[in-house]
Every structure is written in structure tokens, then in C-alpha cells.
Length: 133
Image (cartoon, rainbow, N blue to C red; front, side, top):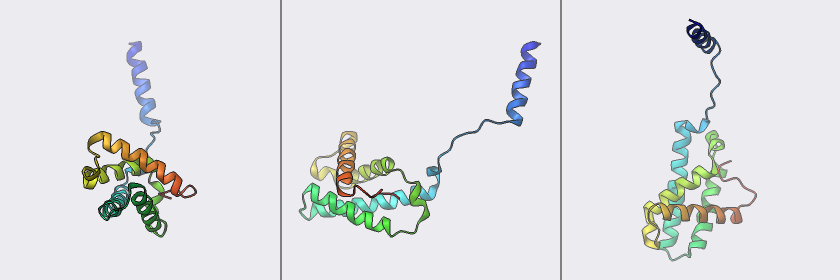
């Protein structure tokens, strides 16, 4: 009987005083759509530069600067919710899927390599700018 009363008390306590859950605003579909647009834009610019004969460093710097300029002048309030690591992962997936095979990047290893390379060049190219804010 004691177990039943204790269980009932805990149930009623949770019913009237629910636990506070932590949720991230990045689950908003508009944030995902903005991330998709940014990663598609970056991928197009990077792949086009590689096809035009740029070195991978030149292509990366050019695509970062051009994409950053577009984001900087965007009035979309959702850009503040984009995490740099998530965006870097999505950009890496997009680039590897779009044109990674042309310079030897395939699969998970290619995505991981491109992500670390992207973040490294990004930090050197725009040290004072936050890509998504």
C-alpha cells in the first residue's frame, strides 16, 4: 500500500509540476531551410570554382567570402539560430555529394575531411565573423 501511495504522490506531483525540458530553436523548419539554402549556395560556388581550375584553397576562400557576404546582408532572423558546426557538416555533405568525387572525396571519410578543412580555412579567412550570425 505504501508503494501505491508513493507512486500516486509522484504521479500527481509530476502532473501538476512537470519537469522543464530543454529544446533547441534549431528544430524550426525555417532554420533547416535556411541552412539548406546556404549549403547549396556554398556547394555551387565551391564546385564551380574547382571546375574552373582554382586550387582547393582558392576555391574554399572564394566560396566562403561570397557565401558570407550573402549571409551578412540577409535580413532573415533565423540565421542567428544556425550553429557553425551543423552548418559545416551540412556544407561538407553537400560538397562531397555534388563534386567530391572529382577531387577524391567520397563517403564519411570525405565528409569528415572536408568539414575539418572547411572549418580550418574558415577560421583563417574570417576570424572576426561568425558565419551564421
